Length: 419
Image (cartoon, rainbow, N blue to C red):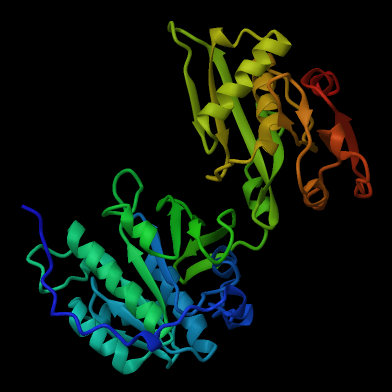
């Protein structure tokens, strides 16, 4: 039996004159200056520059990772900018939220709190108070009393999210929904929730460590390649102003299998350590394990190494890791992955101040990559003095002072100058 929601009889259709067809070019555009700044540079960057009025944002993450802390600190920044914020506490009492707010030094008079989970009452209160931003913590606790299913069920989640979407669009107020995740790391409930909202953010990290990474997997108003990096302290989340330096802070110097590359995350380059461990396989089928990199991409690189360098990869287990919890998806890190594998296989470390940049083709060629200038400047800023780059990118390249750039067109050229 399928659950169905009983609705009141619909009103008569509006007269035809109330709705009209408008040329696309005549539609009034929202000015980017209307974005609401949260006071957090990292959060605003991931959102695309701030919160768009009328947008519906879904924030997911493991329990205890810091989602409530993130939105409460964002509420402080919004309140300090003069925006009215309504914090809906579905899992905690107002006293519990107030204790956390005191610890985080959240004291803006523009922040209001409401402990309620009935969607009918919530809609009434929101339409009465008319805040600029609504924070719902969490969407799994909100329910429609007309439905007989429990809060958090599929039907309740879909109806609650649809209701908040209507409120956001009709009242032009931003709504931030906090969502729980399953054991697989997906937001609990049907994937349709992610299709309904304008922006989906995942807050990731290990509760036993300081660092947290905020990434967008969907954003109708900005890039999905931006990430924000924070550290968790007793006083709340602190932004990491220099993520490249943090990502390389624990890099082992002189270790075989460890190389550095520069990956573009949205508008900024990040220096990331690629680690590889190649060991003799004790089983018939060699293992291929990756963390932070696409397994199929690494398998392709292994095939290219075997074909064009004569490396018998079928005899070895290969483990590849992007250190620091970063996920790398762009092909510009291919050369670094290949270099880390060869370094581990030959047990020969590369120079500590050497960058590897380039995409690999199936013919063993090193192909050009975008934004090379920005990547090199970031490397120079952190003390790197040499870079292996595609020869295709050398024309018109403004090499940073004090850095040596070696252009290569194939794997053989690249590794002949390194190993």
